[in-house]
Amino acid sequence: MRREGALRELTVGGTVWLWNVRHRHPDCRTVLSLRRAEHRHALLRLVFRNAPGRAVAGFPMGVGEVAAGGGWLNLNEPGVVRRFLQEALARGLVPTAHGETDEDGWPLFDTLTATEPPDAA
Image (cartoon, rainbow, N blue to C red):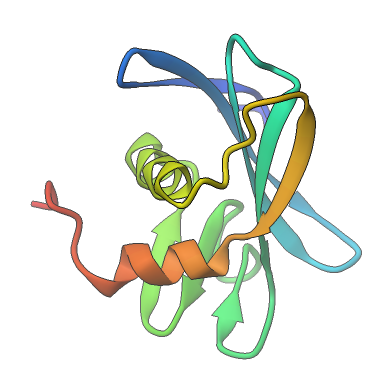
């Protein structure tokens, strides 16, 4: 079993990315953190907070699961993380210099769940 918050690698377009998922309190949020392996101090955190019509990890969901509007994604799945990363890159959300950026993850979630992924079987 994987330890919560352990860094994992994902290669996209020849770039190695490090990522992890954590659940935090007191304001009950799930956080997907992404950074390039060669720029470990340029960190993007996609933050998912409970809100009306939006749910993060907790009964009956597992850690890393987020749901809204009938859509559901598991942030522990590399394919899901790849889609979030690609959308964040397309929107210019990923920092390129030293620093940390927190972004609301729900707008990206809405985009990703609006249509089926192209490689869905």
